[in-house]
Length: 209
Ligand SMILES: Cc1cc2nc3c(=O)[nH]c(=O)nc-3n(C[C@H](O)[C@H](O)[C@H](O)COP(=O)(O)O)c2cc1C
Image (cartoon, rainbow, N blue to C red):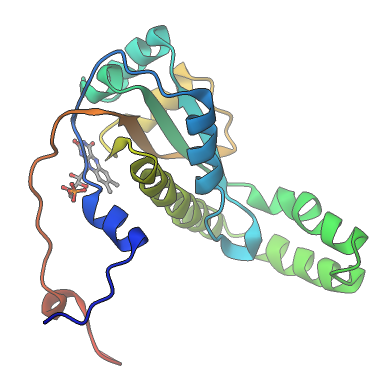
């Protein structure tokens, strides 16, 4: 008999699949949309700089504009909403808004905040670091968004198949933000195609290579 614990979070992970076909015209209530975006923001991030920005595309006209940018993938127009998850290339600029309130509340000494600011701004001198952190941390929020969607009874599908330069241009995305992925959210019309995973033997290495 299996001794694995089967809790709710793992169940949600097992039930999430990348859905490609959605029931058209399903509207996600504003509260649900906010709830899943809020859940996404609970993701951990390096220095808690929350390197994400969510461009929420809900109106038909904007979805039509997005369709060719995403190479005609029809989940763009059939799903309820598409969230473009963007990574913040200048997340270091959030030091004050993230750490300032902690200093004011007496939880963090000013000197510690100053030391952190020095460390963070130093790291951000390197554009590769800025880019890596933007992608790494925004991806964690993207995953949380998809799991939160499943938890709320919706389906989702991540998409890397889009032209980032065109997305930036057509949606007036400031230079500060890097498109990381698009996520369609809605109600499946057809279940996701079956997917499998490599065995743990193939993906796990014990202690050292
Ligand atoms: C970064 C990323 C990019 C993806 N891009 C696309 C895409 O452009 N179009 C698409 O239909 N699916 C896309 N997928 C979905 C994957 O094909 C899918 O997650 C994978 O086959 C595993 O299936 P599952 O998520 O249902 O288990 C993408 C997934 C990820 C994580």
